[in-house]
Length: 265
Image 1 (cartoon, helix red, strand yellow):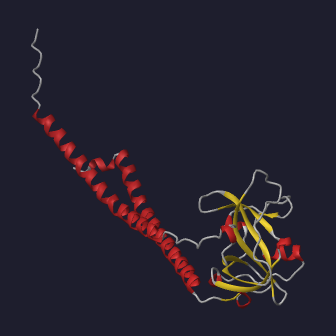
Image 2: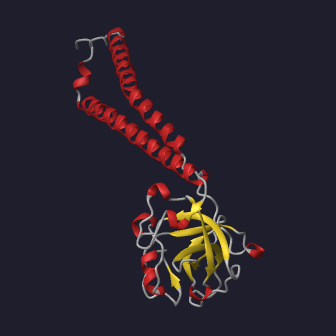
Image 3: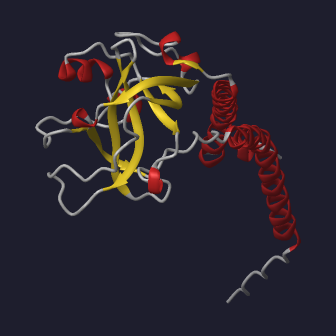
């Protein structure tokens, strides 16, 4: 009854089914690992955002690489903005996906060291080469609050660090490069300013990082495992249907009356 399973068509179909099951199971485990990774990141960001503010000097120093656990920590800094040395970061978008610049301003601390402050987003004008007009930060001694961020890299951001850009325009925020430009001791990483609010709402301050959609990966994990369970069930349904069709065809052939033999001449 099942000899048809040895035909070329059914051998290929069976081998494909056998290969699909472990593949789908493995894809489910991969989605589970993505779920755990995203959940861990979400928890780490949430913990950092809700931690008590600390002076920026406690978490970073010149030449220091900001640790993963310290990223997004709320920090404070007291000093003065040095607007004459600020630069803009090209090809940055706001919440409405409009392309513009991030404003990066050196902030001179009371001990003489410098921390880079991303003051927020401004729109780009028609010219891509002229230095844009930037709203001024508070003058004089200021205390600001922000989120501590790690230096940007091409590997992490996907942004190429282009050379030959117009004066005072950069692609990536890198404290080591800015230290060479400023000839100063610059703390590692930078601060994404959250307070005080800018006058007139410009530059637009950058919102909190959103949560990664970890539940989506969990749903994909369940989906792949359901697919893996469905493959052998589907294969068996097809086998039973093929067997039934063949039996019906055989029965119909047996019941078909024989054609009369031609009369002899």
